[in-house]
Image 1 (tube, rainbow, N blue to C red):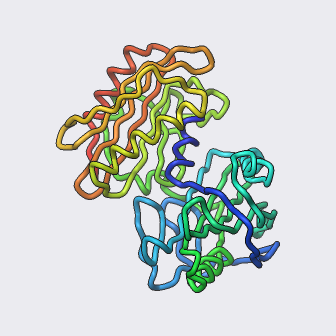
Image 2 (cartoon, rainbow, N blue to C red):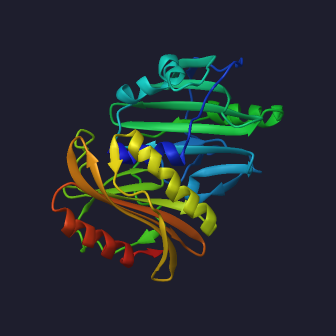
Image 3 (cartoon, rainbow, N blue to C red):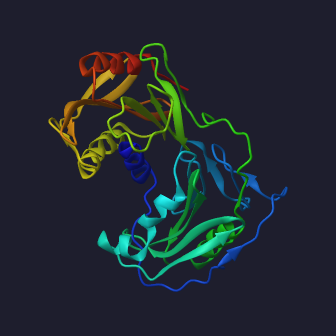
Length: 315
């Protein structure tokens, strides 16, 4: 589970917030109406401007690559636990400055709003995170610092958010892949928008960091260079979560019809030896990241992880 949420923060980075002023309501009252669009892969509805295009693999709407809004939802997380990571103290402890961060109410859900420059030059982020004991949803909008109209559009979208907790949705709606489930016999455990976890018992157990499991993250179409960068970027994130990697060499190879960037390493977590098999697969129209980890029966699962990746077909 630690690795799962490390991936979330990699694919969807709510970076630093600094000195800025923003007017955003303390309470948002919205209703589900025909004006709202459901964000695929989530239970979130928002009013999206007509000139924003949907990018499926990122669960994001964008006007251009400098003006977009992105949603990540985890239906196996607890907002009451997650919100401690969005306090002023938590953010500043990571070296960021923050001015606007406040608690809000979105209908019946508790939430947090943040607004300010990101760590990237000339870029602004606005953030809304909310949930309850059964889910966490993060929504972030990005625009250029000088784009006042763009920021207004993002804030208007955030004010329109409606969450339908009772909606019966397909947790694999955003999956861009197929694979042979019989190789590991792992069961589907949880989804966070475009990331999917499978493990032995099919339960999202956040307290069991040593569970044998694998994660598949759907990615948009990327170049081989970007796939390699992404695969390498994950390494320090694992170690930041306390996972020691014996080997940090990413090798380029071919798996089936796909260019692949592979990490095959022994690991140590909380004094327990394990294995990790990470593969970034580059498809023609989209890509994905596979990350399998095991802390028992490791040799057997390493073989099964490799065979599972060989069985993957990117849609």
